[in-house]
Image 1 (tube, rainbow, N blue to C red):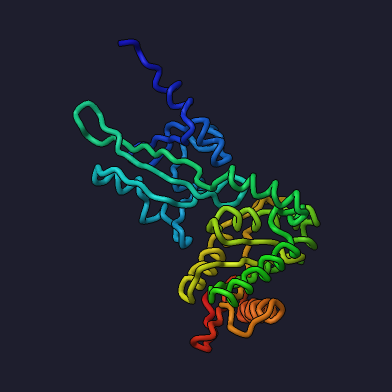
Image 2 (cartoon, rainbow, N blue to C red):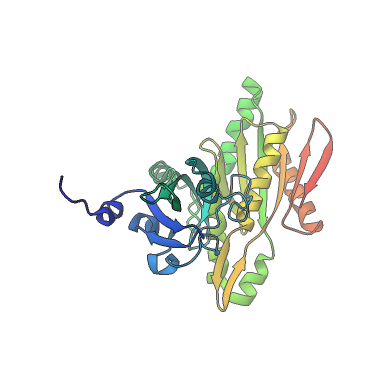
Length: 309
């Protein structure tokens, strides 16, 4: 049998691959890992995987690096694992990835480290196709690449028609970037634009395939959430807020965290576009009033407003 150059083989894979020792110190990082995360090998080799590098979180925004790490668990019990998580890209946004972790053993079978393979599951090509379609219809926002207000309004009209014809419910999520004026005043409009692009990229990467997020105007974003009930809408509003909260942008002298205030509501039988949007907007402003970086939800069936920090 011919000798196999293992490192060359790993470098040729489309999946990101990294090895760690038992202290979770990274010892190998392939080119696909660089492409998916934005971090080059020089950035990470020799560091521990929990040292503010990938910062894995689950779908609800909970950190996995400090207590629920699949790689640490696999090195502890020797059982391979699979999971879908979000990693922290070097540019600041979150990327959904499918990870597979396995233990590495020496010749005697003792565990000496771990290996993680991860692949981008963001549906890049589908998103690119959708962007081209939006471009052809002049329905996208040039700065963020999301749907613009005209497209959002057209989609809202379509969803309201579905409600009338088929009694299909949907929800609306209204987001506003917290202290956006401060970013512009302190760092200039270029940084302000980067804030909007970071929020937009997180929304794009975390949206379900049949939901639609877009830029309503200024620092405001809207999400049209289909086939959803009250608990599900509240969970999506919370997940989006927490994932954005975990995003950062580079500024002179360091990095700044980005947060949003969120209002979420289900459509009501008598809603029109204006009434639905105004209600979600009012809920968002209530989140601002209650301290920012939280969501406030109003569901007609319970007639209760629920605010979550």
